[in-house]
Length: 327
Ligand code: ATP
Ligand code: MG
Image (cartoon, rainbow, N blue to C red; front, side, top):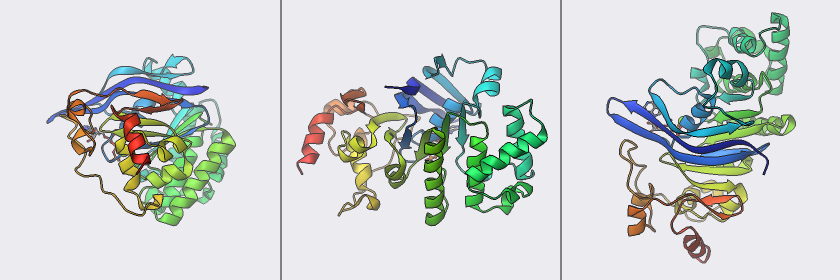
């Protein structure tokens, strides 16, 4: 497999006044070059933390306890901060941040903010050359260059999101992490932006990590899917395999809780995600899992490859799969 990114045993915690939050625990997966990996999970499952860890934009109170992020032969977590800033962030890996209103400073015009990022990427280019690059990327993101003279609050949510896409593309990165790129937008705008993002990904040969809690977005766009729950990978693999033939009760229930998936009966997953300051013993999903046994309460299941490129962290991955398929 031609992988562009390999994440191995990533564990990230946040220190807070009220305790330590186990935001990511032993997360491992590899990303194929040119794929669109949908990263799904309920609120608080660690999706944004994963994106920020890869781009090394975690807040001060976060600590990477262990793990590697291998990209082009080096561990991104070991690279000197200055080198990372100069050669990796925006240039090789960029991010479309969750909530574009916060991604831009309210007191500066769009043009100045884009120039700021462009200058970091191309320190030797003139202002006019940088503006040409910016305009080209805005065209790709399908937004008129007249937005350059405006302040962020003068743009609609959809326009801001397109500017954020243009900004992420400035230096032709190899990987783009899109964190909930369309949340909060109306359905039509959402559809247009996601379609454009998919076209861009294909045209430019980018690898896209698409973070969302919306299963239908993942179903429409992704080639692969990573199911995160309480900071752990519960299932990972090719989208068709994972969605059509889930080997984890959480994925199975998550898919059934979405009306778009064409299921006759909507299912609500009982309970809510655990408090990550004090995660449950054994399998993190056991308190909500209708199939849990004593083993699940006691022993944490490993992430195991159940068929080529398809991983599940469930003690009963195979028997569960047979059971639900015979229903
Ligand atoms: P959402 O869908 O709501 O965006 P998410 O999947 O992106 O959620 P994260 O934002 O990565 O989840 O959060 C993972 C866990 O870490 C949550 O329990 C969250 O409360 C906690 N967390 C996130 N940022 C911080 C922080 N700066 N300080 C302390 N805890 C944090
Ligand atoms: Mg998030």
